[in-house]
Image (cartoon, rainbow over all chains, first blue to last red; front, side, top):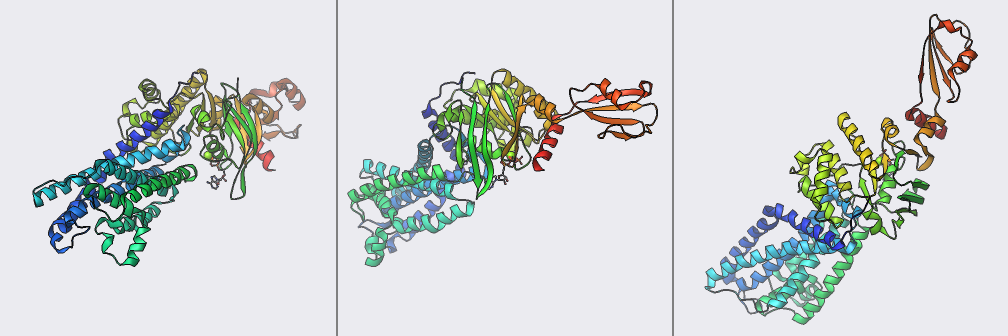
Length: 265
Length: 300
Ligand SMILES: Nc1ncnc2c1ncn2[C@@H]1O[C@H](COP(=O)(O)OP(=O)(O)OP(=O)(O)O)[C@@H](O)[C@H]1O
Ligand SMILES: [Mg+2]
C-alpha cells in the first residue's frame, strides 16, 4: 500500500482553519456578545460620565477609552479562544488527536496563536467601529489613527501573546475551573489594571511602580499610542518589551504543547 | 522489508506500579495480530505508547523502521489508531471531521477516499450530521474512518467492536479482512475471543503487563486445548471410568484427548463394546478454551 506524500504546511493550515471555523460556528458567543459590554462601557463612561472624568494623557475620556477597549477586547478574546477551544476538546476527548497526527509542536502553537489573534482582531475591529460611531455622534468627526504600522504590531503582538497564554493555561489545566480561575484572578485584573480605563500618570508613585511590572500596561499603552499619539510609556520601550512577551509566551506554549495534559476531563 | 511494528523492550510504570514489563515482539507485514488479555492487562497502555499519547518509561518501538521517540512524525504518518474510548467533536459534521483529520496528515483534497470510507462504514447518509447527533455505534465507525483517512499501512484497533450490534460486527469483520487483503497490517485488541479466532493470524496474550504467549492462532489453540469426544451410549455405563479425566453421566461419556490421538484408539482404551455406541461427537478446542487455560496456568 502506497502512502501518499504529505506536506506538513497543510497540517498547520488545516488546524488553523478548524480553529477559525469553530469560533465562527458559535459567533453569537465569540464575536457578538463581547460587543455588548463594550457598547455599555462606551455609553456609560465615554458619553454619560465623560465630562466628570478628568482628561487622561491630555485627551478627552471618550478618546482615551476607545483604544483601551479595543485592547481589552483583543486580549480577552484571544485568550478565550485558545483556552475554551482546548478545554472543550478535552471535554469531548478529541484533543488527543493532536498527539496522534503528524503535527509538530510549533505547528500546533502557531495554529492556535493565529486563530486566537484572528478572533481578537475581528472583535477588536468591531469595537473600534462602535467606538467610532460613538465618537462621530459626539464630536461630529472620526477618531483618526495616528500610526497604522505601530497599531498593527501591537495588535498582533497582543493577540499572539494572549492566545499563547490561553493555550498554555488550558493545556496545563485539569478541569474547567482552573482555566476560569486563571482568567478571573490573573488575566482580568491585569487587563483592567493595565490602563484600559485610566492613565497610570494619575496614580500614587507606589501603585505606579507596581503597574510597571504589569506586562499588559505596555500592550495597552502601545495600542493607545498608535491610535492617539499619547501614552504613559515610551513607545520604543513598549515595542521591545512586547517583542519579549511574544517570545516568552511562545516558549511557554511550546513547552506546554509538549508536556501538557491532553487527557479527557 | 522493515517490520510494520517492532516493540523493543518497552516498560511502563504509573506511580511505581509496573503496567508493561519488558515487552518485545514484532508484527509481520500484512498480518492481523490479536493482542488479547484481561481487563487492565496493559493493551491500551501499549497502544497509547505506540501512538505518542504516552511516553514509555524505558524502551522504544519502531513503525516501519521509524523510531516512535526519535522519528515520531514519520512514525505517526504510517499508523492509524482507533481508540478504545469513544470521542466526540462538538462543533463539526462527520464529513468535516474527516476532512480536518485528513488535512492534519497533509491531505487536504482527499474527498474521494473520505467518500469511500463513509460508504464502507455505512456513514454516508449521516455525513452531514453533527458528531454529537450520532449514536454510539456510529461514533465508533467514525473513529474507524478517521484512523483510515490517510491509508496507513499499519492500523491499531483497540476494541473496535465493543458496543457494536451483531450485524455491524460482522460487516466490520468483512471490512477488516478487506483491508488485510489490500496489504494493511493490523493489530487488534478485543474481548470477543470468537472474533480474534475468526480474524487473527497470530495472537499475543498479555497478562499483567507481560506477554505470556505469542503464536499462530491455530497453533495456540492446538497446544493449549484438547479435543473433547462425547459418546452417547445405548445404555448407562456402570463400570468404573477407565481413564482418569473421563466424565460419565449415565449414558453420556465425555473424554478429552490430545489432538494427535484417534477416536478409535480411545474407544479401544475405554473398552466399551462398539454396538453400545449410538453417537459420537467431537468438539475442537476454541481460542476461548486456550485463553482460559493459559491464564489459569499463568496465575497459578
Ligand atoms: N493514566 C493512568 N494512570 C495510572 N494508571 C493507569 C493509567 N492508565 C492505565 N493505568 C493502569 O494501567 C493498567 C493497564 O491499563 P490498560 O488500560 O492498558 O488495560 P487494558 O489491557 O487496555 O484493559 P481493558 O481490557 O480493560 O481495556 C491498569 O491497571 C490501569 O489501572
Ligand atoms: Mg483497553
